[in-house]
Amino acid sequence: MENSSENPQEKLLDKYTVHERIGTGGMAEVFRGHHEKLNRDVAIKVMRTSLAGDAQFTARFEREARLAASLRHPNIVQVFDFDRQNDRLFLVMEFINGGTLKQRLEDIKSAGSYFSLSEIYRIMQQVANALDYAHGQGMLHRDLKPANILLDQAGDVYITDFGIARLLDSDEITRSGSILGTPDYMSPEQCEGKPLTFSSDIYSLGVILFELLTGETPFDADSPLAILQKHIHEPVPPLSLFRKGLPSGLDSVLQKALSKSPEDRFSTAAGLIDAFAREIYPSANPSTTASTEKPAAPATKPEKLWAGWILPVILIILVLSAGGYWLWKVRLTGQSVISRCTTIDSCERNASLLATADRPVLAVEAYRNAIARVSASEQTAYAKLPCNLGDAYSRLNKKVEAKGAYRECIAWTHNKTELTDLRLYALQRIKELK
Image (cartoon, rainbow, N blue to C red):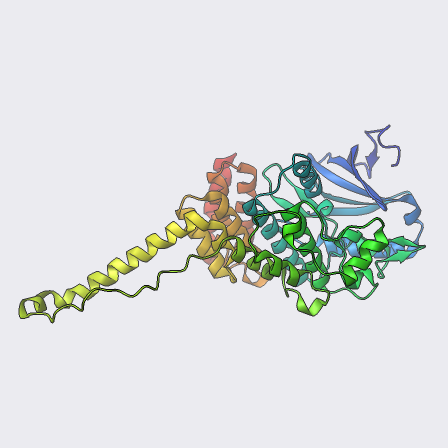
């Protein structure tokens, strides 16, 4: 496969045509491929041939590939297949054609610009949702970094390479004097070769947030070893050293995310993103100024005629005002509304508000947030969520994504009789989108 650039039409297992190389790393190369029978492009990660002769590595490869293939989340690159042909082990994955977050960072930095705070929030929330989902499945990433975060043409993000770092060695750090991992994003415990936990991924996510905000990673040095030492010993530098005008509270958010002790970090990726959102979308404090009006005079007898119905009128006005306030709030701070949802029901409520406020892009993100929180045993109870997501995608004229959501809606009904109408609705929408 090393010579695939010279033979771009090479076949794997008589079903994958291998095209150009689209990425390379220390242990593998990635090629764009095509599944002939399904007529779809795929990404094929081919491991170095020297690794295929290692029986222990092959066993780990198969185990990790099965675990990675079990992850099903809208912001995680799906593993479709894995196999071996001659002396080559390979993974077949979903093809995402928008480049990497690393490339996007480099483009923005070369232009002398920065990501906007709203764009950072959008990216980070999708990454955090995927990371928390994977952690809920017992899966660490171990090498989370911008190069392992892909973007599609719509700007949505996808984490790739879950479990790949673990293939080389559980120690993560050195083998024959080399560093396994990416020093810029490694947690202190990873730098010291200690056992990793979910907090190690949270640390890496904090480094990515720092880089998105400033264009730089928090620790830099002349050698990888010196960077590792800084992760272990040096405090996180203030953001103002790299970029002026950021909310001052973001420093405390990053101090917690990048704490040297795993126990002092955010317990979940969502916790980190919620704290970030509170700083960039501060809630307006209602006025507490006391009224200076004099108390109303006691009611006279004629006023008693309408005293019985004034209370219901006031309640109706308050309800309508509250609804108007929430729609206004959604229009102004849609992302903040998304960030505060902590349950399936609250995420669904926020998504509905966003859809009502004519914010389909944010509604899509909110519905995806809700869907990511639904366990397999809860799918029938929340089967309408993917259909609502399909409706939001339809409003954006994203037909492929909409059909995928409607198909998921059908799957979530699990052929329950009481969900027949929902199933028929999804089928009709798919037919209309063809």
